Image (cartoon, rainbow, N blue to C red; front, side):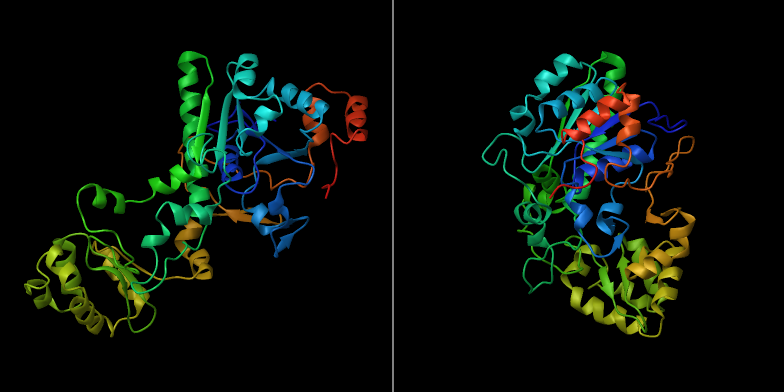
Length: 398
């Protein structure tokens, strides 16, 4: 299906992935014009059932990751299913999959085999730990990687237990890394004419998120620890109470600190030797918090945050999800997508000439099977024959 004017218009993606990292990646590609064909297993993408809430035949979880795609279902365990996948790959540029490493090889669809037949094909594999090494081939899950990569060790209150970040940050970043890898490979293909294997692993992505903690370790700093909302290297850089809602203050230099003190009408604080430099402020966090919160007690949080931002002091009110969605700047930045009954989060990537386009909601199970296969050259009779053999399920198979 042609998507004119998109940055990736003319690129066809065969998406064999499911759950989060892979679907997140292919949704980004689809938003920017790629023709993404989502091929689900006979049981469907399991996130269709990860509700409530539900919209139609699928949970909100599925809807958040699968717009801008066409959908079909295919049993790759069947010989005819593998043959049909190869036929679809004839016109494809990218294959995205997140099977357990070794699965495609077991089915006779290894990268060596596919690249020999389709030398321009870019194959992206998303996995937990990669295919080799001490943990190669083992399954990976977001929360497990948060634990193993160190994220939980630095997240949480000072005296609290290690805490998981409250969203699947490793899965999402792995999906974004896959987008980067695919677009790099597409660019390189314009020179070489050849595709290549692209790999992103949750474990690697989890480790890559550990800034500034890993650099602090590399250069002899103290072992990272949980600091709650405090920054390990900067002060004041945490949540502060006001007369109403709390604010997050992120002062990065002495000029910003002086402006903060001036607005709060406590100019002498910026001259106090305990707070004169960032290093001094780090050593006197508790005293600094007491002084600042005393001055902030007469301010409404949202108004104080707005005033501070407008004089160059980074600050924002602590909003809940409903407040964040209702924020006027959320609307202005087109960060909410509406397609009929579908509602989703917009793309944070803004391109001036070839922006994202939101035209199709997430597909119903096997919704576009016939159209996709007609494009691939199959007749009505051939499609019905494969359907009768169980290769092309119309409803999820338990």
